[in-house]
Length: 372
Image 1: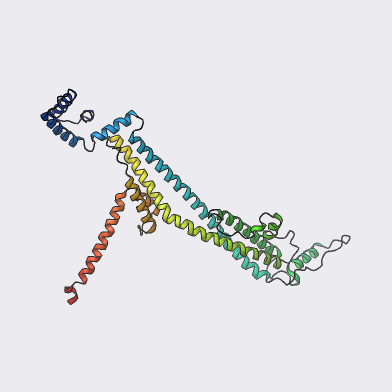
Image 2: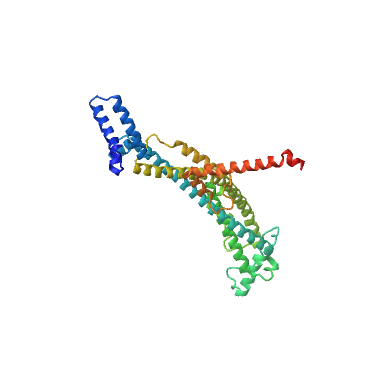
């Protein structure tokens, strides 16, 4: 401690320095007396007051750290803080990543479902219900027959697609087929994204047409329009709308599971992890400052700070502690872990608010106020 005072240029009385040096010489010579011990304690009291918060123990820890001795407790604590920060940080990164990806895929499914619903309603009005049978009129000619004119071919195609009534009034056959193609393509996108999203909930949702997924021909027939469309479009639409209803139900189920699972994670787990990350960041900074100022004591492991940070993060996730403030709950949880004093100040403020409310209620219910 006397060397630390001399290194920093802190002025002390000559008597203090002399008493320490005399006591050291007497101790080495095994000639320690009661007077020398008393003078030493008096000198150490003066030195401790001058160098506070540095102590003899913290100076020893700093000396060991500077020498990089193997097995020092301060090194193990520094490694513990670093490992804790890395583990919590990786957990936060992983959970945030899968939450972000699942949220974006869910939003994409919702948009596709809205578009598919609009197309389904539009096609239902244009095509109407299909007939009981799907037999198109015989408009094909024999192989040796003369090919019909282009206009005749177009009329024959429309007869196959729309029957004897022709296409809907004010709508061309091209527009109807385009909408039908968009509907089928959107349905396939919903199915693909829903199956991907189902992995995020460990395939908890039932996948429709599961027994056909390995049969490419059957799946193509289910999800794609008939090649060349040699059928009534109303019948084709009816077949595809039945498939779409299964896919839409599957998509809605997966979205509900995602909302429940990852909503719970965002409310209960992530705030706690952010608070623990804040606590680890604070302790690493504290360790660095203490080692620089030579105030670190190896016995200070600050385990209680992690526990308090976890409790604070859980409170932040469960309750809206920042009403009217444009700040993320995760940022609040990190700040709670980094500065635990703020969390205690918040709790003390709540207690004072409840106490004032209780005092005001008792004052209003007092006998004097009741008589008035």
